[in-house]
Image (tube, rainbow, N blue to C red; front, side):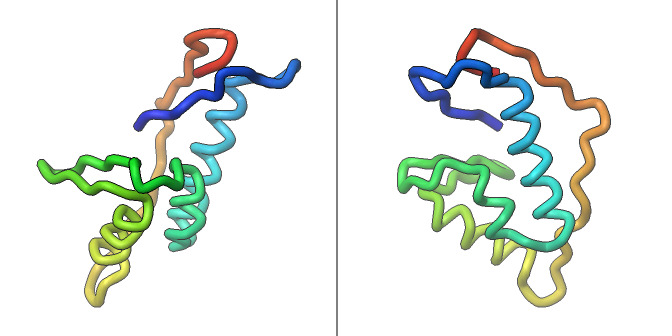
Length: 96
């Protein structure tokens, strides 16, 4: 999973806390079956690229559609996201 960083950041902002908050919000949305909420953490752009199981999906809407087909279709289950050992490291003053 990758994140895009803005060129500047307000004073006092903590990149690690901000990334963790987005990640947590996405996991919480996933665990309650809310794919729209889960996708809110991704770059909403036709240039988003998603790779899974050897295939590539381009575009935010296309990625959401792929998730819906894979996890919301009849007979499919989303499962639960849990990342107990996930670590976030600050890479620079403007990104984690």
